[in-house]
Length: 192
Image (cartoon, rainbow, N blue to C red; front, side, top):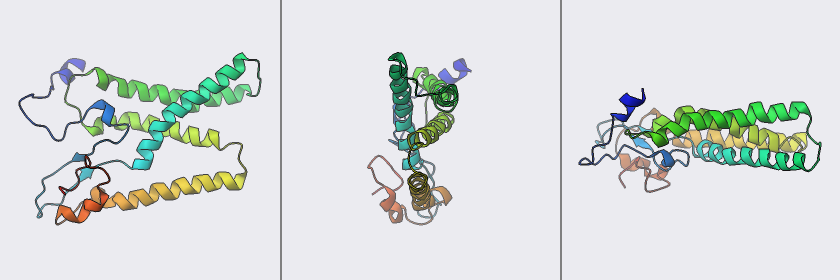
């Protein structure tokens, strides 16, 4: 598998506007335009939900901070965590980060042409880490405040999905109609 993947190397003499680097994926630096700019063609753009991407990437660091925080406190003699709490951190937080690493790291080593969709298996594990982080950090809040945090995240995630839905379901007509979704110049869902 590694041999066949490494054979798919980028051509240095050809400009490839669709390829992306591994470091661009977790921060949603680029998307992937999947068709021409022609007004008679329905256009698609592969771009994730910014809240999910940025939140899940940040949560990888949050899980590390949670582990470090409780590790230092345990070393200093604090016994605030029960065995079930430590298992919860391990199974729900640390294992997804390990899964993310093992799905992401090979693309750092590979010399092949890479695209944003190569990040999707790792993204799944980052999302699990995000869910753990939000759950763990809101655990000690009142029930009403906790549900308020969850509701805000749900509404924001669904709202961004609806906002970006034209790139998912297809953008008929001129791509200029969809330039409002272009938050960053490197997101090329329109050519303006």
